[in-house]
Length: 206
Image (cartoon, rainbow, N blue to C red; front, side):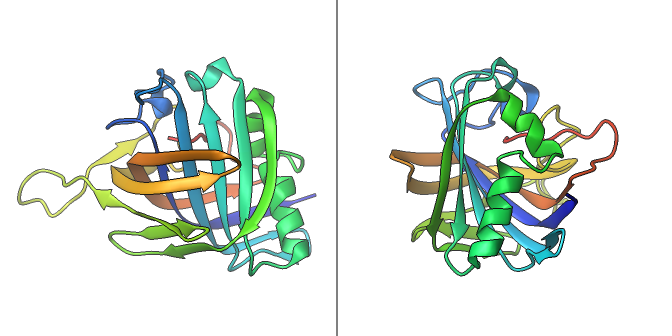
């Protein structure tokens, strides 16, 4: 089955700045693990005949060590406004059952936490914000060089949701899948994933 999703994402995790997951180093959180969320707003997408445009989802992760060490825990929260058909399609994609980059995730995942339905909201802009079940997170980008009117980015990371993404703070409180944590690090960018990614493309939670 063929699928494609594109839009904008905002991710936050418990690592201190900057999160080392994109370069496959161990997490820098106080407990040595990376608890994180990535909220993805799908501007355009589908799984075969199922239209996924307008659906918001949240990928929830627990990385106990550097990414390639595996033993991940992953789950997905799908916005309550999505139809049951859309929610099922999103879960199959994120769980890796439909191929593409998320199939690579499945090989590193020790426990699939499942799918939950909650309000998942996303607001785009220079300082994107998101909420999962009413718990808000706002992205605060790190500025670039003084006078440049730019923001700090990471480019060509080993693991990344996009070839280049903005980095900064993303303070927020998350309570999902029996986990409660406060996010510190944040990143945001436009993204595009599909069942047939270009050769050499990689993706991961930063």
